[in-house]
Length: 225
Image (cartoon, rainbow, N blue to C red; front, side, top):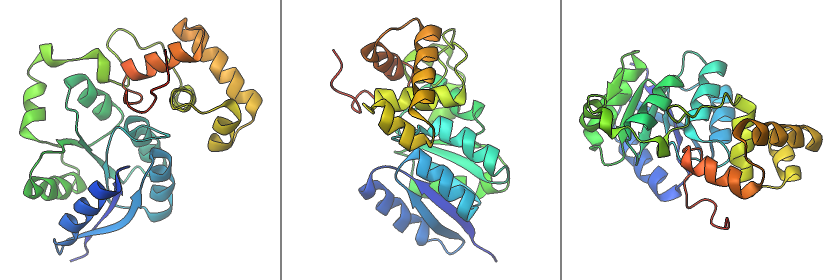
C-alpha cells in the first residue's frame, strides 16, 4: 500500500523532530518535507504535493491559518490538519474556515495524531475530543486568538494579512517587499490600506492588533510600547 505523504509545518526544530520520529514509526505514513515558516510550507506543498500537511498555527512569516488558505488554493487535493497549542473555539473556526480538515491540540496522544492523519487523508473531518467539546461551548470563544475576530473583521485581503504579519514581526518595508516578492511602493500602499481599514496610525497599533487578532503570538514582537 502506498504510504500517506506528509509535510510537517512547525517552527520549533525539536518539536518537528519528535513528530517526524513518531510518524516514521508507522509503516503507512511518510514525511516528505519539513517547513519552518508558513511561507515555506506553501512553497513546499506546491513542489511536493503531499497528501496531508500537519500545520501549526503560530508560524512566523505567514501564520498557519493564512498558509492553509494559500495551500488549499494551490493544491486542492492536499488536506491540512492543524496541530496547535491553542484550542479556543474562535481559533478552530478560523482554521476550519480557511479549509483545514481537522484540528488537534499538541497534547493529543501519538495514536490519535496518526489516526487523524489517516482520516483527513480520506477526506473525513477529525477533531480531538477537547476541540469537539469547544464547539458546544459558545462561551469558550475568545476574540484574542482568531485570525478573524468575531465582529471585528475589517475585510482585510490575503495580501494585507501577510503584510500585517510581517510588520508585526518587525520587518521594515524593504524586508517585507523582498519576502513577498513585491515592490517597496506596493508594501507602503498595503500598509496605508491597513491603517485606513483598522483606523490605526502607527506600527505599534498594527502590532497590537495583529497580536489580539491571533495573526502572531505575543512573544514574536516584544518591542512595542
